[in-house]
Image (cartoon, rainbow, N blue to C red; front, side):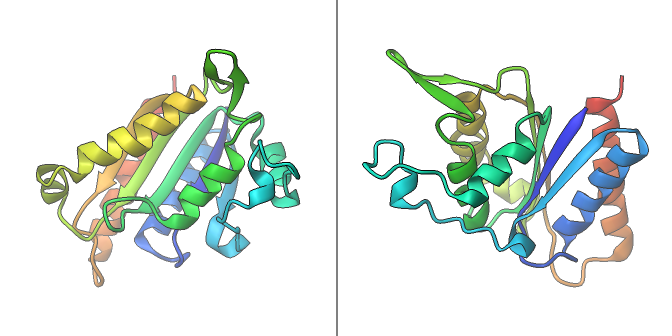
Length: 196
């Protein structure tokens, strides 16, 4: 099984970086293929350009988008790793999804509207926030994000949304044993979802 890890955090050594590494290591240890896309270290341009809009008179995909599509074209699982800021994903991740998972890759046009092209593939997300998980849920932010981001993205692409694991209360100075426990949760989630 091929997993595309899409990691969106400006600090490679962040908490989110730790759980992304745990997922990657677990996958490799179990013989899965892993493609790791570190959007900040790649300096990925999240801005959708006018020429990339399909109905633009000068429509042409840029080389960075073509390269990403080539890497991801046969991925079975898309694993998103990101912090929640202002109750939504970082701009670099949203821009990556807009540019890479666009028309002709994740969906196509039909007379009745768009038709997904990624049916049978899976989406899983791992996120963190400084706010406690209970607050994120009680405030309505969790359901809003699950509907407007996870659910919508999965539906447009035809992906099966299999899980969204959230770690709340992640603040500067978090204890190492707490981080390790969350890394273990990530490993166990991988085993539960992808090991027969």
